[in-house]
Length: 141
Image 1: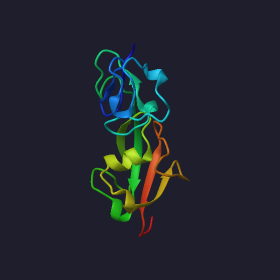
Image 2: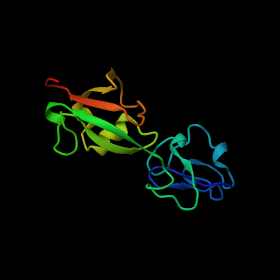
Image 3: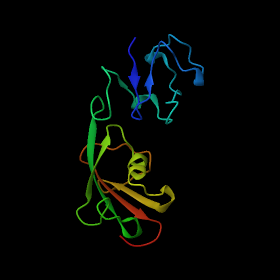
């Protein structure tokens, strides 16, 4: 039976199951309920990839690149500027929430999020080449 690895590097091993969520040993990954989440980071099972050898975050997990602009109080030098945008690499399947965490910006500080000029929420999935803009609760763009 194949093992599957989360972006956080947790590996689901069907031989062991997941006793923390009542998953019996011998349960294949495909048989896990849709409600099952990574016991380490809480991500849904669709963020897992089949483990081939011993993948790391650099191999075995496809990545995407997005360009990010931050306005007024969210700006940080070399991380998130207001000019042309700053490029960031994320794991495929990443959301706006993942990006904001990576940028170390408090969620409560972000009022508006745009992806490719369309207003979105924190759960919106990102794709390679997306342009993301983050605006604070106060201040202008």
